[in-house]
Each structure stands twice: as structure tokens, then as C-alpha cells.
Image: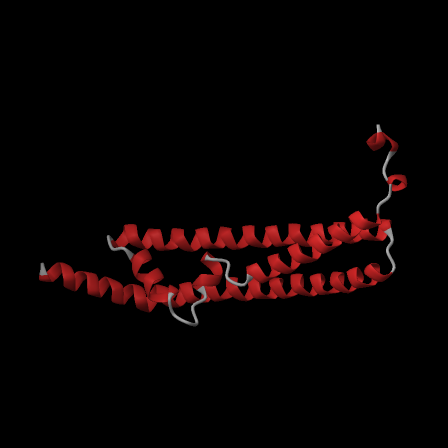
Length: 165
């Protein structure tokens, strides 16, 4: 029983020295890319918000439709970013699973539990998409406002003839 416990401690020590640094670098790279892309999306949303404010004062149906399409493109880029993060999170889980299998020890549980609750943990951004909610909220709120305003500008003359039948 004592040798098993000693073996586990040695295995954890080996893992800690070699793999912890590699995983931390990989996770940090993912998080920094995620933050950079979130910043770009936020900047695009801010620019679109300024255009939306101008259109609120001077409504133009075609410009509103173009703006709505631009918001949709931001949303699609956000989905691509989330897919990228999910793919990388899966990769991290697979790396940990390989260590679990190779050393007959639950590295995944050890690593995630020791890192996820730390105040400076980057795992939360990878596994829980912390921070993305603000981008989603701004995008949703602006798009809903635009949709609401567009509805108030429409008249029966703006609708295609087929819609009136």
C-alpha cells in the first residue's frame, strides 16, 4: 500500500515537472488568442453600434439591412471562435487522458482541480468560455435594438408584393 502511494507521488512529480509547463504554455497561447479575437469582435461591435446610432437619427431601410448583415457576420465569427476554443479544449482533455492511461493515474482530475479554482486560472476561459458572454450580450442587445427599430420604419410599401397576398 505504501509503495503504491509512493509511486503515485513520484508520478505526479514527474507530471508536474514535465507536463505542467507544456500544458500551461498551450493553454496560455489559446487564451491569449481568444482574448485577442474577443477584442477584435468587441471593436467591430462598437463600430457597428456607432453606425446604428447614426441610423437611429436618419433611418434608411437598406442601410439597416446591411448593418444587420454585418452583425450577423460578427455572430458567425464568434461561432467560429467558439469552435476553435472547443477544439483546443478537446485537445487538452485528450492530452490529459493520455497521461491518465500511460501512468494509470487520474491526471485530468488532479490538473483540473488544482488549476480551475485558482483566481488567475486560464482553464476557465478555455473550458467555460468565461468572457465570451459579454461579447454575446453586446451582439444580442444591439441586434435586437436594430431589429426593433427596423420594424418601426417598415410600411406596407416596403414589403414585397408576395407578402401582401
